Image 1: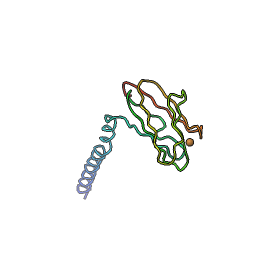
Image 2: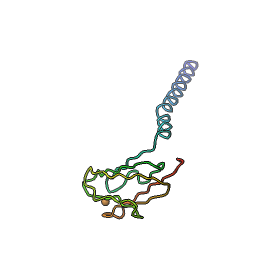
Image 3: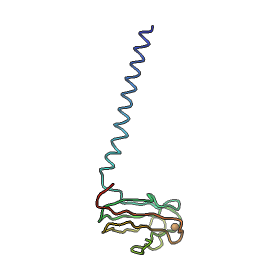
Length: 124
Ligand SMILES: [Cu+2]
């Protein structure tokens, strides 16, 4: 009885370990792959927010913003180096970031909507 219990406990433990390893393979690997993949170059404007609000890209990267809201928004940099027109639903705005720097931007219609683009030669 005790032996059988111990055996089944060991079996459960093994099964649990196997499951844990499987989970690692399933969930950790894509995260590592994502880190090695080229940086995301799209930003969705949704529910009065830029997503992601903060993004880091390499010089020369083109970022495309898409307005997913029913409300018009803009993508207007603080230093005025880039500025979209009023974007209606599903309208896109593109800007290529040639040189390194930190570029904060906001929506002129809703100034509480802010975002920032970090342009770095080496990804962190
Ligand atoms: Cu807006």
